[in-house]
Length: 444
Image: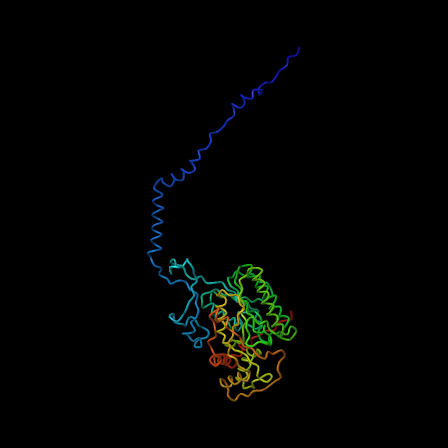
């Protein structure tokens, strides 16, 4: 009879549990005492306390040998930029400069900053920086210590306006049309790119409105991507032929949307719309300046604007052409006043829009008489039919700029005009190559 083997090795449950391994529970107090013992060992705590004491003594007892970093502006109350319009800051005595501190709040409440800390120059792009206003702005930014990239397609800009910066390592020149996207790493964007005179923007109206709309979109997109502050140079033309006089920023304007000037007028109005939409919808830091008639050195000769027309005609012994009855009014500001306003707007805390112009109002006949007095008393005046959609009155209300920016123009027409005349005389009679300020642009 076969025997049966019965396996009983695991039937004893109690014996099985006794053979299992159970480690001792960790002692919780060891996680606290180990770091303390490490610090106390070899007098480490003494060395830490001595180091803290030395650092505290160094930053509290030893005074800073350098003044606080500051952003520079000109005190026009004590300095007249007429004497040197293209090199303001270097020629201003230190005692006549006024500043705005770069560091504010509790971080600098004691008036001291650590040794070796200096103002860091900004990386700034200026579209249209080779143009009339843009080149003067570039001069000021370079003098302030910033690194400047000029973006220009040279439709109305000229290399001669910025070539004195070519050897400066903080200056770059990029030939580029803002209608095409551009990738840069910058802190601030001054968007000036757009033909600003009737002769130029009527030459290619489709290109003009594309520059205002697509170009502004591209630069706003760049500002959004890199977190840069964006300043749009708009124009007094957004008011059209105004029914309100003088014009305040809250006035919505009287613009012909299908006129020959609407590529510029409505283009700038759309650019303002885009700028505010990016500000509200994408949190882009923006500033808007509405520029009124500006004159000064480096203006394009024969660009159709009244001041440059009168000056060039008087120098060439040609009749001064007055359109219509000559009773239309304009306000004229010197270019250095405008640049000061743009920089204050960019560095300030207010979005705008701000009117930047000289509230001194002249009729076209009065302007012609000032040009006669300055250049040629015998220059005769010739009347011609008025151009389409030409505004009858144009005068800025700059109350907002005075109150929020602390800005107002300092240079009168009779002081600034001789400087422009000197520049035009040299360019017309001294070097005819400088007279070629425009290039042909194909219809887009």
